[in-house]
Length: 342
Image (tube, rainbow, N blue to C red; front, side, top):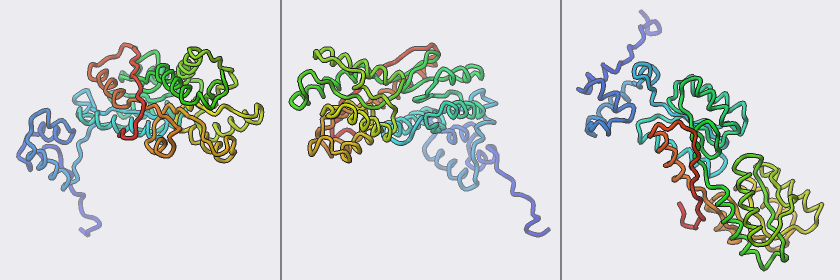
């Protein structure tokens, strides 16, 4: 028999790894699925099992194992974007907390596309995830229905649904506090009774609640907000840029103070300010319902409100750990970001 015709190398089983390590198959399974610390397996044995598995190219068949245990230990998450620190932080902390519980996280980005969200949910279900977290989904209840039919738990993060537990930021309260701060900071540069300009967002729950907090803060200050001052034209930077150009062409001088819905439209706002020279050499006071550590360092006229991602993920995994399935809304307070925030 020539080398090209040689029989295929026999792949190791979990029992082979156990024999080589001098351990039980259960111990091998616990080490390779990340739950060995809870079982009080020694570090030395865990390292020996991992080394043997790595040297022999062995990986635990989680799907086959899931069929035997009636649980796969897989947990899925869909996210709308990777292009800002907020969603990146959510993914990082989600993966960390999942692994702490011996779960294997699977994450995919759906580009705020409703059909991609459904495709991703179906793929996750087909891979037998035990739980699926829909983050910032355009139609979270549609995903919950798919999960429910397949017997998969579902939860919502960032944007709420009506059919599953949801964890979100306190959008109204945060917007109210941020608006008050920018109204105070810009009092000397705005005409009496002039409102802030609102930029970014779309017709979703979070934007609606942020506009509500924005409006309530103005009402408390005795300032009315003309609907034309609310430019909820989407999240894309180009849309924010175009909306400001159009409004400036219609109304002339715009308020030298703004509320921006996230760092994504903030990019378009800053581009318009720089290219249009609408405010000359003076940057307007801006409050942003989002956080990036570089922004306040570069300009002190920009105040950032940070969504408490750690608090949101703690609340999410509390619901997961408690096996909560009844629809409920958990709102996590926001934080004003400081320069030393990590």
